[in-house]
Image 1 (tube, rainbow, N blue to C red):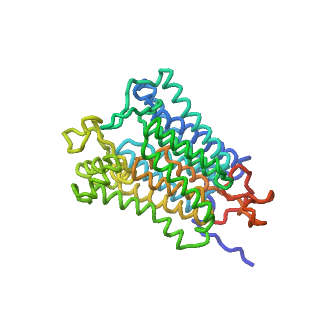
Image 2 (cartoon, rainbow, N blue to C red):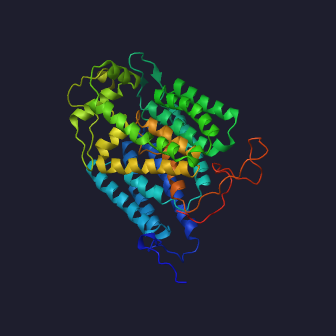
Image 3 (cartoon, rainbow, N blue to C red):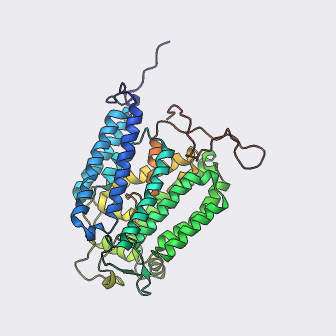
Length: 436
């Protein structure tokens, strides 16, 4: 029998150094180093370092482009993507580069290069160690804040009530809430298959902390919603993998949230009772978004957004905050990064959610859905580690998936010793050939 010809786009990366000893291990190591260094850079960017040591702050930020370059070399020479996948990845990197040239924000470019270089990474080890690093980073910033090096003298208060808010070394109290939320989501991805009652208590404790210390309403709301979300996903475990209609409905969350954001921030009539109520519930985020809609047009490749208005704005409390922040990821990406990057990211996140549901990765799917809702209230879509959904990218592009869980027996609701839970990265997965 003649060997069936493989289409060019399905062939393995032509530049891959197949004969290099331990190629996959080297690729995984390079990915982990670049990813964790970029985590450190993101901590520096979201900390008070920009106020206390601007020179060191700008030097650290400039280093991220070198990580993107190293990751691109990793993709080209050490990964075994197909030719078609390589074309898509390089096209996305090129689009991100063109976009960042228009507004100076490098996040999309760096993230695309680094995350897609994780094809040969051990997802379980990557997830566990990243969670430890994030927890250590939060504690370190808090210690530096109380000791003085990161205390710039800035004090934060809730408008009208003037309730004090602790930033713990971050540039804003919402940064504390976002990082705690992300850390909790990583904990869910690691623990969901072995969840116990005290795990719920830990999530509730995280919500209480975010309410008392940074007073971050968004994080408190999402952490509170995470508790019933975990219960539902555990109760209907694997249901989306079996029912296409359910998967389709769940995957509509990203386009639905994007559509709601555009409608509220651009087309909703100002002054109506619904507009005022929604604006109040979202802490004036709709009023802020309306300002940007009136001063910026959607472009193909993005533009630099000025957060300090040049003229008085008809927004309550603008005299208190003295600047406007577009706290909506969908609108922020649409205006700053442009229509092309917006469509790429929406398609990518929707596809990633679809694959997580189809392959039974319920823990990652739950985090993706939760982050889709958060993006309506925060501009965290392209930020590590604030966006926990980004940690699922290396799992999706991995060259091997863990084996499926065995059918539970004896009606006890627990797996036997020979079973390997699908969402349990703490156990070393069996390596399977790529079936995509």
